[in-house]
Length: 103
Image (cartoon, rainbow, N blue to C red; front, side, top):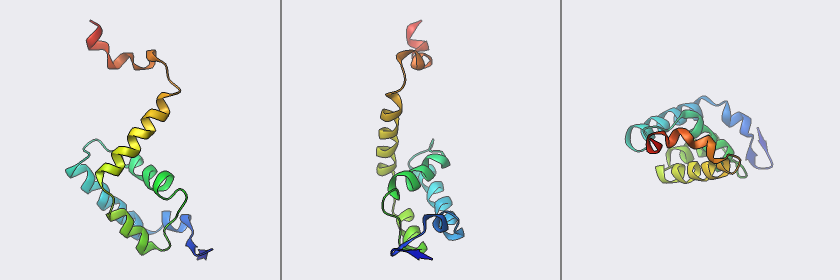
């Protein structure tokens, strides 16, 4: 089950307790802080950012880490992702944002 003292990330991804913790925390974040947060954004935050280099050592640790996430860290991650993605776009890609302003 463990590889080099660190739990296999695939086992964490497929664990029912982790899925339940994700659902609970996601609901909490949406209800109180981030009304427009999408589940895919939250899952990407966990697996592509928070646990990218350092995976939890157990399911219990993964659940604890999920439940301790605050909205500020999610916002920082999403802001960083938006900056990175915007590097590959041009001003014309954002014309719908300014449609009302240009009239």
